[in-house]
Image (cartoon, rainbow, N blue to C red):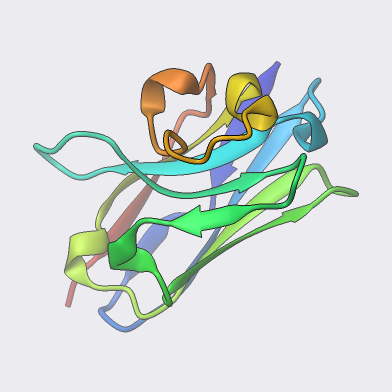
Length: 129
């Protein structure tokens, strides 16, 4: 079972990138999928999630209005469209899945990394002029 994150790269401030998270040997329709990032010297933080059971999505406040998470079930892939990128968005971006949060009716721990049990290897996003 593998999660593969891709799509990172170098972009100037104000630019856009689309990250992809593709799963093999697991059906993303049976999980909550989160995107996390880790900036140099900082803790990993959740930036967006999508719950495949009820379709709920949410974002970290600092990315709201700029990032959009979506899922293509036919391709078994989750995307993170990132627009208006700034230097604070620089970091390694990871996708992860959670079965516990998929079933949870409570939406207060969706950015808790410990509740995600499968992680992709990360893709580097660098925003710089």
